[in-house]
Length: 91
Image 1 (cartoon, helix red, strand yellow):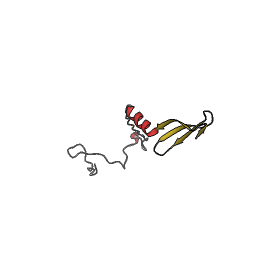
Image 2: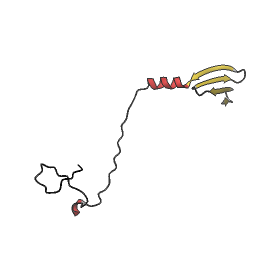
Image 3: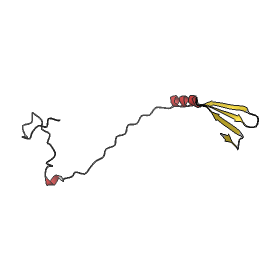
Image 4: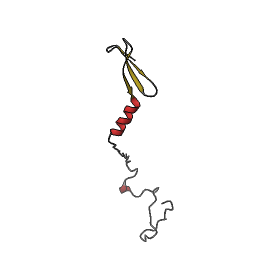
C-alpha cells in the first residue's frame, strides 16, 4: 500500500509482519509484527465472560377460564392420592 501524504509504502507478509518504507530512498523505517501485538494485547486484557439467556414467551392458545387443555397431560406423582389421572411415563 502506498501512502501519498507521507510518501511511505507499507508491505505485509502472511506471517503478520508489516514493514514501513520511505518511498523516496527505500529506507526501512519500521517493522511491526501484528501477531505479536495481538498476543500481547490479548494477554494484557482482562477476561470478561458473559452468559446470555433469551426466553420467548407465547400466549396460551386457550384461556384458563375456559377449562383445561385436552392435549396437555397432567403430571401425577406415584405417591399422590389426590389424582386419578394416568401417570405420564415420559417424565
